Structure formats: C-alpha cells, structure tokens
Figure 1 (cartoon, rainbow, N blue to C red):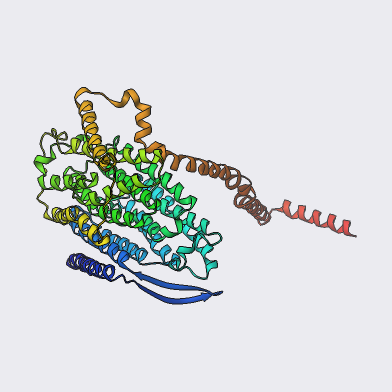
Figure 2: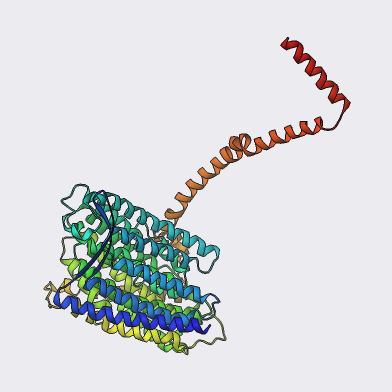
Length: 576
C-alpha cells in the first residue's frame, strides 16, 4: 500500500508543477504573441499525410494549466472522499487516464489525433460513471456513452470530408472553410460533435445522469474536462462558423439549453443534479456567446467557470460524505453551524456562479451579458438571456435556503464536522481561485482595457435581473416551506419544467422502445422461428432420427435382416 501512497502523492506533485510550468509559458507566449506548431509525418496515403501534430500556444497551455491544477486538487480530495473504497488505486488510474485524454485533445490541431483524445474521454467517462456497479449507474453510463458516440461519428464523417483537402490539420484552412465546397457540412458536423459532448439540446439528458459517478469525478468532469471539450473544439473552429446558418442554429439551441437548465434546477431536489444543471446552464452561456462570434470570451468564461464549479462540487461532496451519502436537499439544513469552512467555500462558489461583483464569475459573465445585449440578437434570445440569469440566482438561493439555513432535518443525533483536512485543503486553494482567478484571467487574456458604453438600463440590467431572481427565489421557497403550497396542484406543469422538458424521456424511451420491439420481433421470427427450425434444432432432429435408425440396424434383429434382404431383392429386380 505504501507504493500506492507514494504514487498518489507524486502524481499530485507532478500535476501541480506541470500546471505552474504551463501557466508561466502561457503568459510568456501571450506577451510575445508566439505559438509553436510541431508536426511528425507518420505515413502518406494518396498525397494525404497522416501526421502527429501538437499546437502549443497560449490558449492550449493555459487550458492545460487549469486542467492539471484542478486534477491535482481532485486527486488530493479523493484521498479523503474515497478513503473507504477498496479499489481506490483503480479510481486514481482512471482519473489520470481521463486527464491524459483531455490533455491530448487540447494540444491536437489535427482531427485524427483529436478523435483519439475525444474517444478516450468518452471511454473513461463511461467507466467512471459505472464505477459503483449498480443498475442506476449502468443505465446512466450507457446513456452517456451512446450520446457521446453520436459526436464520435460526426468527427469521423468530418475526417472523411476533410481528407479531400490534402490533410487533417484544420489550422491550415479553418479560415477558408466558408469558401470551400462542402465545408458547411464539415462545420455542421463539428458543431454536432460539440453539442453532444457539451450536452446542448437535444443531447442534454446524459449530463444529470452522469452524476452517478463519484463526486470527485463530477468535480473534474463538470469543471474542466469532458463537458468543456465541445466548447474548446468550437473555440478552435470558431472562424469556420462565422456567417453560417449553423451559427444561428447553435445560438438558438444554446440559449434554450441555458434557459431549460436554469428552470429545471429550480424544481430539482438532488444536490449533485442541481449543480449539474447549473453546469449545463453555463455551458449554454459559453456556446451562445461563441455562436455570436466571441470565441475568446467563451474561453474566458470556460476557465473562470472551471474554478468555482470544481469548488462547488467539492463542497457538495463534503456535505454528502458527512451526511452519510444522502443527496436530497430536503433532509439537510443548518449546515452553517456544523460545517462553517465548507459553508464558507460553498457560498463563495455560489456567489461566483451568480456573477457577484469582483469574484471569478463576474468578470466573464457580466462581460458576456453586456456583449450579448449589444449584439444583433432578437427579442426572444434577449429574453432567454435575462431569464436564465435570473434563474441562476434563483436556484442558487434555493440551494442555500434548503441546505445551509433552517433546522437539521435528517436525525436527532448527528456528527457533522469540517475536520478532514484532506477534503478542506483543496477547497481553500480553489476558493482563492474563485476570488482572484477572474481578475487574473481578465488581465491576462485581455491586457488592453476597454470601456463598454451602454445606456444605464442595459448597464445595470444584469445586476437588476440577478437581484430580482434572488428575491423571487427566496420568497417562493419561503412560501412553500411555511404555507405548505405544494406542487401537486400543478403537477403536470411542474413535471414538465422539472424533467428538463422531458429530455431524458425523449432520449431513452423512443430509441430503446423501437429497437427493442424490432429486436424482439426478429428474435421470435428468425432466431426462434425458421432459423431455429431449419438451423440448429432442425439439424439436431435429423441427426437424432438418423441415429435412432442406425441403432435399430445394429440391434441384430432377425426381422430387420429379413426386411433388408427383401428390400435388396426388390431393388435388384427393379434394376434388371
């Protein structure tokens, strides 16, 4: 066991050192405007080169720095959260494989090498979702894997279409995609792949289902790895989408995803699923601003969101761990008196999520909203932005209301503490990131300050909507608790809004019902029907009947001999 502890610690130290190395080099490259493009030709097929390519620029190095830093914190955190697991070594190996796949995807400007990292993420995520090996985890893992396979097929088709360009390094001709014949299809396929990985409508059902994985995995997946892979891919392909119909469709679907996730989180009672739906809402924000043509803003929000979302999941994991694996927020309460440090970090992450001034989320989210309000969008998209912003504060205060305030609702005798330094130490590091990370990224990515001049109403609209959403959310939940206004009176409406607009049902039942019914029909008709009659069972009956006749012939019966003699004579007479 000692060797594994040493391996665990050395992995964390290596990831932290590598994160610092990548961050320093990223700042250096962005200051001198330099990128490194490394290419190794493996084989050439019909003038198309299959190459191994690496892109080391400020964006890839900065993203790798965040991924490795959060991964190191997750590994440290797992030492406490997964301490009772007999297979913790297997868990650590899977997390490291997950990080390796994500790193491979980040530094690949080549569609073939991107597919390797993309498939690696899908495979390892499936294994991590089914980690607890029960029926719920198996169903969630299958939904996750099959949803992501759609994106894998889209990238494979894009590889086939791009082969006519003479290579798969999309960096060489991504700016000319709109002028090339058939490139609109390639852009559409890339957007489809990104939508499946980042769980945009209609592929949103797998994201809350993936909460069956251990909480440290959720902190890694929902902050900087799996779900952000689609956003990162579109950031790299952003030049190919400008002015296309795909960009407009992506704006509509991402805005609907943002609104749908915020609405569903207000009717959810599972702690991890509420945070998962908040991730889905923020992914919609990233995709929507990217579809408006601001790729650097989407990347900025991606990094700032990674810090406070990893912190929020770690706080939720600490609460669940101390609550003896209960995840229903209705059985929690008064955690502020029992877990003050975790509560402090959780409130910090929630405030950053809401875009509170001068925290990590404020610098990116407020800028995104102001840019969106200035863009050429219609009233429908504008209203979706405003409603999603208000709903974010609404479900955040609802979460605080149920978990941190009021009375403890689980048992009369309980022991909940913050004594596990293994779980609280990573929270403090990420808490510092949630406070200072947004300002640091703003100064680094946008070193030249710019002033956005807007009317007073639009300038304060984001803050106004946030405050209004918080007040409505608090009052609504206060009324439900004190006046027993249950949702059973309007069950159909609540069921529709709380079930992600029936997205899980539409993603599972229609596909599984048709395939299973067709499979059952062909099983009865073919496998158990004519195929069985003329196949295995039919051959078995023929052989058995022939074997019975041979056995009768070998019984030395006088009647059989006489009968065979008579048959032989008749045969001779007929021949002659």
